[in-house]
Length: 148
Image (cartoon, rainbow, N blue to C red; front, side, top):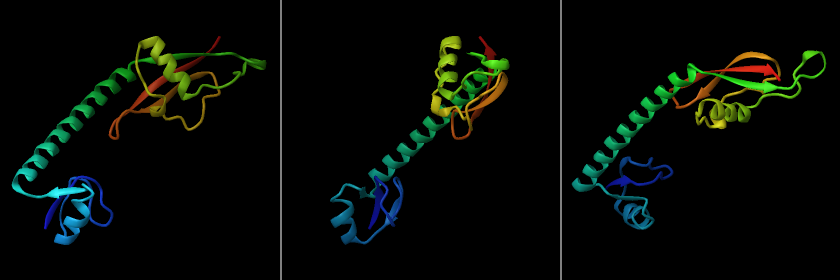
């Protein structure tokens, strides 16, 4: 029996796959637990429309991420840091502070989890920080750390 999976089923397939399973397995497990539905012409057409809609949304999200990355790369976020003895910075700049400063200076909503910092910035100067906006789009944000 051909079945369209509504959720991932271990050792059978992933969500959206059309798989061939035995009649008993389909009736007693997949249909009862609502993990799939019969692959008739109506359900196949619905699946095709749903996949087309998902592809359209994915393309829109990718385009929006690319536009936002162009906007990010034009800006330089300035972060003020106190100086300690000998002009060395007192403390460090983390992704949370960078996201807050981007919000206050340019009204850009950047999620702190998307800012990729291997370790916090502990020096004065200008740094290029990668921001992962999408699986295929990574922007570079310039962060200038100044003494206050």
